[in-house]
Length: 123
Image 1 (cartoon, helix red, strand yellow):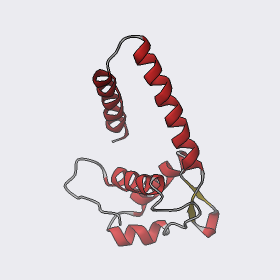
Image 2 (cartoon, one colour):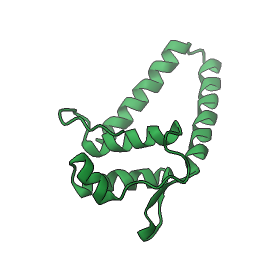
Image 3 (cartoon, one colour):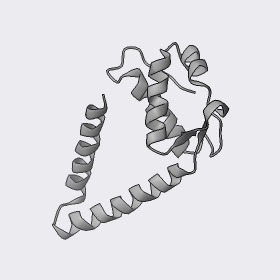
Image 4 (cartoon, helix red, strand yellow):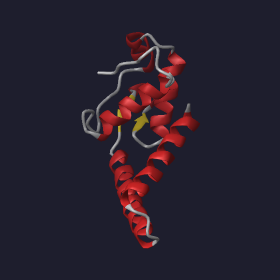
């Protein structure tokens, strides 16, 4: 279920993108699942077609979905590859922070700041 909070400071396309990405990553949406058409999802959520289209484009750029012309948009297996890349990057980051003497709490704060600034750039 997708919920768009009208009063949120997060733009609707980002709310949609993040919720779909989370559902793909936690396997609520399995590989091969056909997503609703952009027009249908826009109507269901009360959003502009361009808003849903932007969310789908960003998911496609991230390799989480693929669009097959008139056949529609589908969840890809690439999301697993992205998760594995993130795991490897996290392991590398942990090794670096340990080697330079940064404690766990500070390392987590650094990651949180990086993730927060990335979200800000996207909005």
